[in-house]
Image (cartoon, rainbow, N blue to C red; front, top):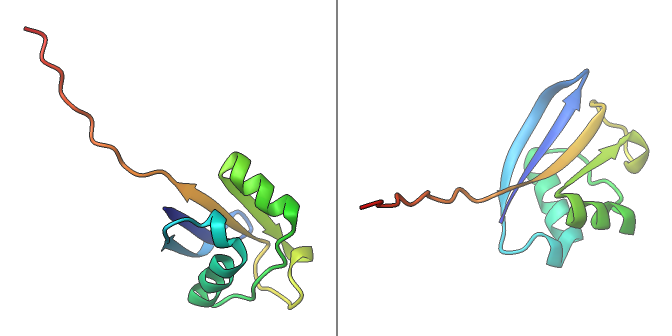
Length: 93
């Protein structure tokens, strides 16, 4: 499973990373902390609403109020990246 984490300031991506894990949902807090460490930002407080929104819509946004520390971006977004599936050619003869 791949998750794209990105920080956005004034509608422009300032940092981003693709994070790969077996299942992001099973250890949401731990994977979120590791992803934030890798991208070098503070870890936001993830509520049950954040987790449910990510599971249901495959995207979640953390705003300034979700961080204890000060941040230099407008929001942090996580988005599920679907796996590329190869299309198979069909023979019509």
